[in-house]
Each structure stands twice: as structure tokens, then as C-alpha cells.
Amino acid sequence: MKETRRSTRQNHLALGQQILTIAMERRMRRGDHLPEQTFSEACGVSRTPIRSAFKLLEQNEILTWREEEGYFLAIGSSDELADAVQKLEDLENSLAQRILADRAERRIGDVQSVRGLMTRYDASRNSVLIALKVLSRDGVVTQMPGQAWVFQPILDSPNAIDESLSFRLTLEPQAILAPGISVDLKRAGLLRAQMADLLDTPEGTMSAARFHRIDTDFHSFIAECSGNRFVRGALLAHHRLRRTTQKDTSIPDFRLRQSLQEHLDILDSVESAQYELAADQMILHLRRSRIRRPEAANRGTPPLMRALRA
Image 1 (tube, rainbow, N blue to C red):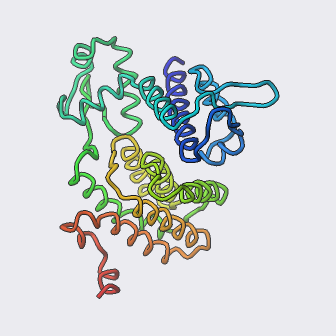
Image 2 (spheres, rainbow, N blue to C red; image 1 turned 120 degrees about the horizontal axis):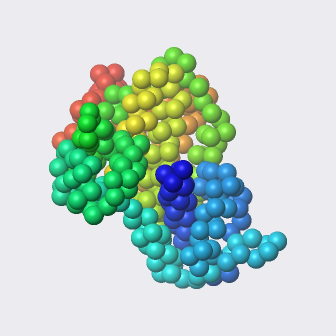
């Protein structure tokens, strides 16, 4: 039960950060109303978690609540909103994230024991096990026989990101082409609305963090549509790992916008059952993500696509 409450709180913290990021992008100011339905659609969740996130923001004096009116911003400037996002990130600084940060910085090795982590972080056995379960859910660690836990490769370098793209070039088009694909049109519509909303932000102001959330949501959605359970499972695990460990903020604004438009084009093709076209669009989309790594530009490209470019 404690683990469930903790996981729920972490989800509300992440959603609170997303709400504040949207408020910044929309240049909202002190006293502006935050309609539940508007933020439910923008975040791609139901009203219930939005209410919980609003309540958390109220508890941290970021929002105020008025009876029969709803929630309103209690802070005004963009700097105050940025500080509020940082405040939520500090609240979220759990043992799992401390372990992940140390792993990303190579301060801890590939194999760790529960006792060793207890000593390193001066934490209880239960706290360490909960943190490891959180990281296991995200595909960061795997439990071995006994007390050993093994860290999986994480997306913390250009080479790791390139290997990730190679893996995705192999499987994501196949996720679309496998027999039995099933598309949730309602969820596709929510994703479309989120991407259109992000594309409406002024040039040069797009949040890389919000783009990353939408990007992993989109690619996870494509994986979930697949009729091949093994392809689906492998991709979903990989996208959880991307969501947790990939922190590439160097992508230029124009490429973020181009990528979102490519997502929308793929959605159009999938929704209209043009699966071969959608698979080709996915290949081109992933290859464009490798443009900043020219040494990898032609690796993993199917012969058909190379012939089309010739």
C-alpha cells in the first residue's frame, strides 16, 4: 500500500510539472483560471488525476482554489513558474532518482546489491527495494538470483542513443506492419490534440521536456497498436527506458516541430489503414532523428528505402 501511495504521488508530481510547463508556454499569469477540461485534454489524462495534481499544486502555494470556480494561478511571472517547476522536481528527488543519477554519472557499477545500496545511501532495506522496483518498472534494472540487481544500458551518450535508434528502426516499422494491428482512435485523437497544442507555441519557445513526453507517448502508442505481442513488449520496455533516462535537450526547435508534424503524418496513415505508407514514414522519421550523427546515417536502412533515395 505504501508503494502504491508513493507511486501515485510521483505521478501527480510529474503531472504538476507538465501543467506548469503548459502554463508557461501559454504565458499565463497570476489569477488566470486553469480549467480542468482544458488541462485534461492538453495532458492527455482524465479529470481525476488533473484534480489531484491541482490539489498538490495548491498545497505548495502554486495554485489557489475558489469554491464553485475552480483553481487559479497564485504566481505570476515566467520566472516564478520556472521556480515552481524546480520546486516540484526537488520534491520528486526520491531515492530511485538519486540511484539513477549516480548510475548516469558512472558513480556506481553495473551490478549492485541491496545491502551495498543501503550502505551507500544510508537507507532502509524497504526504501532500497521500493526504489529498485520503481527502476525495474522503467526497465533500468533487472533482478538476478539472490540479492544482485543489474543495470541495463541507459541512454546517456550519443552512441547509446544511436544504438536505440538502430533498434527502433528494426522494430517500429514492423510494429505497424505486423498482422492484427489495432488502433485506439480516441487515444490517437488525444495525442493529435497534444501535438497540435505544442506546435502552436511561439517559435523558439517549445519545451524540450514536454516534447520528450509527447514523443515517447506517441511511439509507445504505436507499439501498443501492434498485433505482435513480442514486438509490442520489447518496444514498450524500450520506450519506458527512453522516458526515464534519455535527456537530450540539444535538439533545435525546428527539428522538434518537424518531428511533431511527422508524428501527425504517421497517425494519419495509421488511422486510414495505410500501414505500408505509415511504416515507410516511420523509417524516414527515425532516420531524420539521426541527422546529427552523420556517421550513422545509412546504418539500419532497409534496402527498399535506399533504392528509393537513389
